[in-house]
Length: 291
Ligand code: FE2
Image (cartoon, rainbow, N blue to C red; front, side):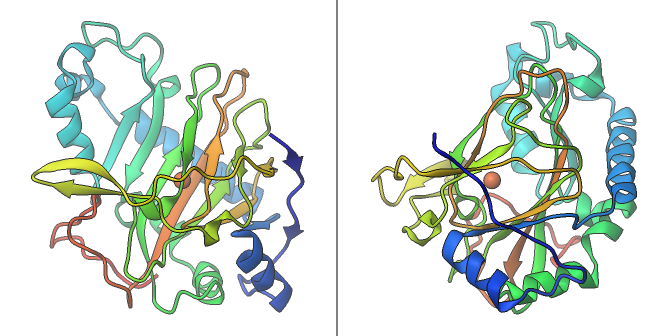
C-alpha cells in the first residue's frame, strides 16, 4: 500500500467549516483530532471493561463453542441489533467451549445498541456536538442505528477486510456515515485503519441482508476497488475519524502487545428509507430516535 498522510482538522463544537465539508466530499473521510477528551476516552474504556466483566460467557456456551457454532451463533448475531452482545475473537474458545485466555483479552467487540441501552455510552453518543457534526455532514435528521466497541486485542486482534459500511446499513437514498473514535492510540503495529480516499463515489458493490430467514451478501457490482493509493489512518487517542458509508476501509491484524480500543457509532438519516430486509433490525420496544 502507498501510505499517504491524512489531512487533519479540529472542531470544538462539531461544526464544520466549508474547507472541512469540501475535504469530506472529496476524500470520503474526515480526520478530526482531539475530538474526545482523554478523560472521556478513559471513562468509555473503563465502562467497556465493566460490561465485559459482567458478562458470563458460560451462559452462552452453545453459542460460542466451536463444536456447535452455526445455528445458535448465527441467531445470537442476527438478533443483536437492539441488544448489548459480546463477540469473541476467532479461536478464543477450545473445543469444549472454554476460553483459552482471560475473557477481557478474548472479546473482539460489543454490539450493536450499547448507545441506547448503556447509560455511559448513551450519554457519550447523544450530544449536541455529534448532532452538529451529523447535520454539517449533510444528515438532516440523524439517527444512531448501530454502535460497536472494538477491542482489537493484542496479538490476536483480527483483521477487518476491505468493506464499506453502507453494505450493512443500506438506506434509500444512501445516508450511512460512520463515526470511529480512537479510545487508544491506533498505529500501524496495532491495527490502525486504511482507506481509499475518493472511492466513496464508486457504486455500492454489495448489500448484506435477510433473505428467506438467512443473512446473505447480495453482489451488486463485482468490479474490484482500485489498488490505491491508500491513506493510513494512524490516530492519537481522542481522534474521531468520520467515514462516508461508501468509503472502502480496512484494518490489519494486531500483532503488537498493545490493544487498540475504538468505539464506532453509525448514523443514518431518518428521512431516508431503511429497508426491512437489512440485517440490523430493532424490535418495537427500542425504536430509533433522533440523535
Ligand atoms: Fe466499517
